[in-house]
Amino acid sequence: MRVLSRLSCCLAALLLTACGGKPGDAQLVVYTARAEHLIQPLLLRYTEETGIPIRFVTDKAGPLLARLAAEGEATQADVLITVDAGNLWQAAQQDLLQAIDSPILEANVPAHLRDPEDRWFGLSLRARTIIHSTERVDPEELNTYAGLADDRWRGRLCLRTSKEVYNQSLVATMIASGGETETETLVRGWVDNLAAPPFASDTQVIEAIAAGQCDLGLVNSYYLGRLQRQQPDLPVALFWPDQAAGERGVHVNVSGAGVTRHSPRPEAARAFIEWLSAGEAQRLFASLNLEYPVNPEVAPAPLVAAWGEFRADDINLSTAGELQAAAVRLMDRAGYH
Ligand code: FE
Image 1 (cartoon, rainbow, N blue to C red):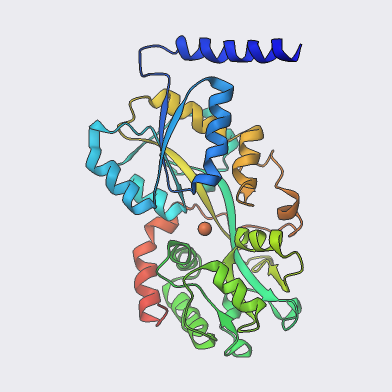
Image 2 (image 1 turned 90 degrees about the horizontal axis):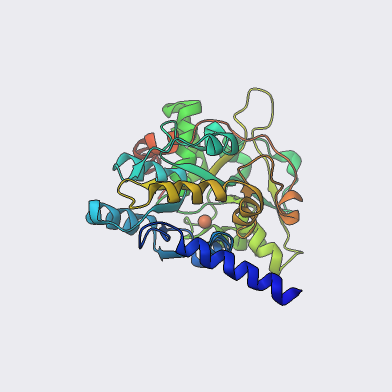
């Protein structure tokens, strides 16, 4: 029985491949800035389910966008996957993505996590939030992102460099909700409170807190998850800021995807992104990197759920792109490098 059912699966895959239309049609090419080990299991699963083989290229967002621009109409790429809405916005801005009309994506991806013009869609959600030592900080002392500028944290804060897109997107959305003057004052307060020059990575920020070099910082939630998997007793915890009525909520960002402007197979590309937005694929996309599913019907992994519920900022993430340049200038003026 087992052999028979496996045979019929193979047959189904072969038939799908053979009946996919013109030669070369039944395949997809994906350019992805999401790391290979986070995306490859999904690509294999899609091929298993549909018989459509997927070729992929991994690189950082910048080089992938440059490659798409250089290839123009000759590109073989159908789908672009990147981390951070700031990067997705850049791709759309450079006319490297096309709008997709998809009732499925409209239903599965909340409106603030996708492009208002439907050129990109968030597929997993990460919170950029406060992290603190469980030994030297009482969570009662914490409240908001702005509160990290308070004098009580002098010499106790660790931050990642402002050169990376994550902090640019955070500050861009702060400008949108609080205005430029208020945001600059509080970023100056963060800089005044630094215990050490900004670090290259979020992981280094968490390790510095665990090691006692500083007491609190700002990181993407999944970096704590990665360390917690190896060291469940790490003396650091997440805190959800800005939860009171009238406050903005936790800053969230996405990994997401869009169909390339010159995709040779735009219909197949749309179907693949739709598949990623629901069910088991959506669960896997988020949980491989310990992120939150964007689809509210899909539950996060147990380790992620254990961090507790929070209210997220529901500002549309295209703001992260629109105000990115202003955020970079502001951080530079404030001495945050
Ligand atoms: Fe990351």
